[in-house]
Image (cartoon, rainbow, N blue to C red; front, side, top):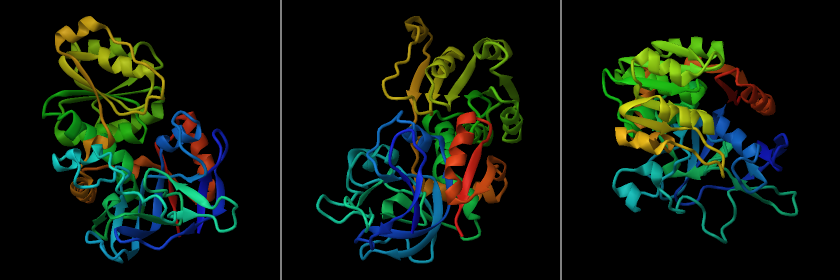
Length: 363
């Protein structure tokens, strides 16, 4: 099968022929139909987060089940599925207390000594590393059954793929991590795929005022379609001062969806008393955040959000229903539909920050 392979930090992905194993007892073989090109993939390409090479990247995807292992009970051949990078074991403390996205068990990977899921038959070192339990920049995926969920078959694959990461991360941060209540005020910093999902999630949650913040006018206009009641152009002055003035003292919830030191600190500074700042973006390894200690006397909080604190086997089918009934604005999130060999162009567009999402569509 064709796959986009990461071999060296800072270098373009290479389209290569990669072999894939047959499903083990708890594994699912999926024909990939669509895969979103996410900023998280770019972080690994740029070396901001380490990952062993070579590896097939990609982690936001949807497809059709082709085969299942002997012990699989959750999906069957022919099912349409969405994948999720936060695969869960089902029996650790995090899983049994309902925090599936926090699972840190290695049970979803193959045992040491087993043949690899991905490999190159013609290479001296044939093993190919799997990325975030998925590797969806490929024509097929071989994953644990706890890394996918079946969905209704009338859901289009290209928009379904977005639910696999950006939607679950953004909407989940709003409704699960921060528990936004009807009438509360929200600010979202960064209007890429995850930020737009957070804006949309705040609208679904009934937030009274939703302030979208970005440096690109095109993204701010898009944010209005997703439910933003106000927009702030961060290139035109201090966004914190603008938010404080607009709200008369700050917001109840802020969401940082970029992964930068400056914007994380801004998310905290724009809070009202008792407010909560949520860091969704991937802050590079080694970067520290500086906050004013006295601000904590106002009962302000800052917290992380891992994949929207999801329970994806429950959440994703519900998000599909939200799209089908018009509540989730996924069509507007896709800027371009591309082929696998255009993945490096999509990364360049992500670096420029001009588009929301490119989606790889497989024939």
